[in-house]
Amino acid sequence: MGYKVVVAGATGNVGREMLNILAERQFPVDELVALASRRSLGTEVSFGDKTLKTKDLEGFDFTGYDIALFAIGSDATKKYAPIAASQGCVVIDNSSLYRYDPDVPLVVPEVNPEAVDGYTKKNIIANPNCSTAQMVVALKPLHDRARIKRVVVSTYQSVSGSGKAAIDELWNQTKGMYVPGQEVEPSVYPKQIAFNVIPHIDVFLDDGSTKEEWKMVAETKKIVDKSIKLTATCVRVPVFVGHAESINIEFEEFLDEDEARDILREAPGIMVIDKREDGGYITPVECVGDFATFISRIRQDSTIENGLNLWCVSDNLRKGAALNAVQIAETLGNRCLKKG
Image (cartoon, rainbow, N blue to C red; front, side):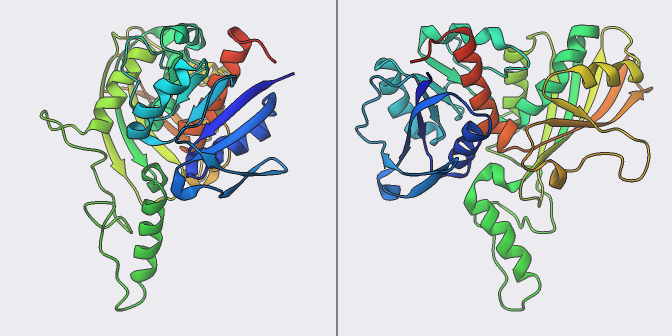
């Protein structure tokens, strides 16, 4: 016995990853439907050893389906999520549309699984931003021990967070650097991304921060603790997959780096790789395809009271998006839904 599951946006990077992870984790599926926009209708996608043809999201009847994983962006979600929810299907949404709605749970299962119970208000659960998801997995067990006062985070975010066009832009710009006359002008990003870093993700706000930075602040408060002060600088880097973060944490009480390392080793969803030697840490290329959030470079910060620094790396298409959505579905099934 299992669930009837829908994946909306099944032909995109995140949608395909959702299908892969549902199969890899052997999520109990009785029936799975892959949905896409009309222009992608009939495109074949893989689900384990099966090949599925996408069906049209427009007009799809969600009645009788248990869970719908949405990876279709905010505009389409605004149209289709209320339809699915009204037809009795629980929507787990990867867009930013519902993250800040007080009636919609924002969930990272290793951090606040109990929040899933609030899905009944709108039949919708929100998936957090990719940069937030991996960070709060690391913050929560440390917060439980010593209470976090303030976080300063700088992100190094891969181009896959911007979609396939951004991946192509990095690839083509990189090739163009070596072939005279084949240079590629920026179109996805405001500046060249190949061999460069861009301190600008999403739109600028009135206070000078970007919306990506604001998301990390607002979502951390909603998921972990509203009293945590957080400031972020979000940077796009010429990496295809995998987000990295340099995180500085100030606690209310002293937390020794060795104890912090032990706490993180025992925490769900985390792998600690922290050797003080050449290569004794994890980089984005090493985390691709993995479920874990990797923590390295754990060390005391003597410039502030009760401070720690750490390095956090994760596959943004997995923990930052598809994996977290599937984990939410697993948590929903374990806590709230009946199979069959």
